[in-house]
Length: 175
Image (tube, rainbow, N blue to C red; front, side, top):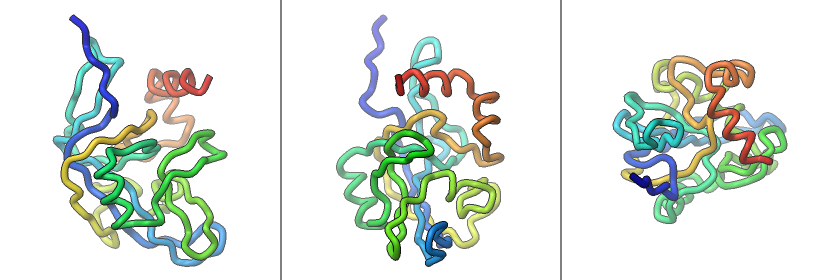
């Protein structure tokens, strides 16, 4: 049985999260955004036997988004024009990230999702200060580990311990 590999690895009902933070570089107010999936949003798991689409099971914020379907990207740009692709020296890859409107500094996912970030442990920590916009159905591609589980946020070391297959797959694609 052959399984066709999809163009995107996340599909279904998506959300755009908005919140205000301080820019790491100039301390100006920065409107940050992140994409999130709902409980029935699906991820393509090529490590599963057989490879297949599986629902998230609960809402989850996403990181390392590298591409979006054209209609979804246009909608996100209208809602948050400072969220666009750039290269991260830290992650050693390009992905959609936030940019400061004052100093144009790129703000990677880690800053917005870390323990002091606007989206840490969303939605378990609550939604205070977070505006949620329903984007409808869409398709995106994100590099593993792309889901930030709502009950914890991982350091790189923790991610390697909990998601060794996903980390190895991401490292293979860099070679």
